Length: 53
Image 1 (cartoon, one colour):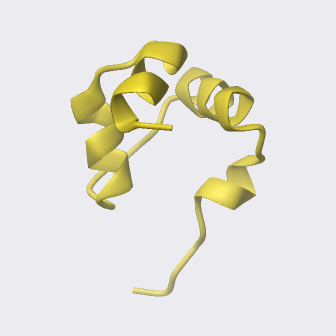
Image 2 (cartoon, one colour):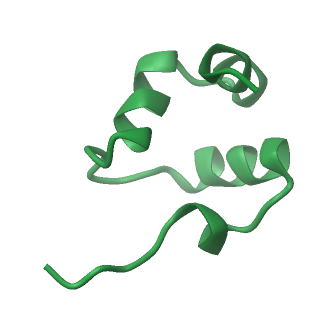
Image 3 (tube, one colour):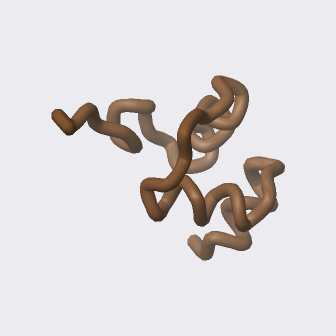
């Protein structure tokens, strides 16, 4: 799936997905996370991990 197709399915801008993809996001709305997980058939843990600074 392309970033553009995912953005359209989730209902966010491609630039916002790009920010998340490149680890530059400071926060993600719960509604966006839910929509991403629905579109990708995954759980939040599949998308994010906690890393010590």
